[in-house]
Image (cartoon, rainbow over all chains, first blue to last red; front, side, top):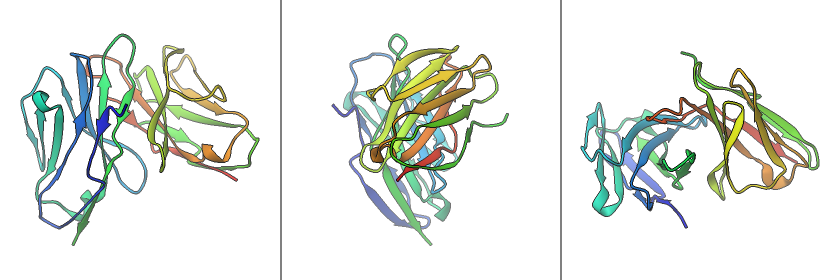
Length: 116
Length: 113
């Protein structure tokens, strides 16, 4: 069963528009971690943000913000005032901290294209 | 600190050959995980090594193996290559502490002809 679902395959916006990426996860664990990674055309996965299951406080970091809601198992990510350099594939990931299981389960990714 | 490094960056092999990929983690990180990324299957976990021991393994055939050295560097080996093994292989390192954030290298692009 898919543990992380990113329903949006592609999003295209004009520069300076906001972009919100949806992520829905599935787990039976009470302790888990959620991540967002960015993969530019170069291929390297770049860590963006992390949230643990006990902290539902939503935060803003620069142009990034996130909305974590355990009640709906969602971990959405927003880029404010998008820029061309934000064009990349964005992955939501789940790490279930049970025993020695530290593997990341990734969603299928959302391709974001920011047009000048 | 230097980031995660992977060598080589690109590889071209033919079916039936074997290949070894290398990963050097961030200094101080003792956990190294490997992932395979393909257009069809997305990002899939291969295995994790911590303190030279395999701690976790994904659902891949035995042709995929790995090891970790005392300096935490890791190698991944794929024997008897198949066309379907063409992929981007990503290595990630973490300190395996409570934050457990995995930091990824640039990947090795393997093409099997």
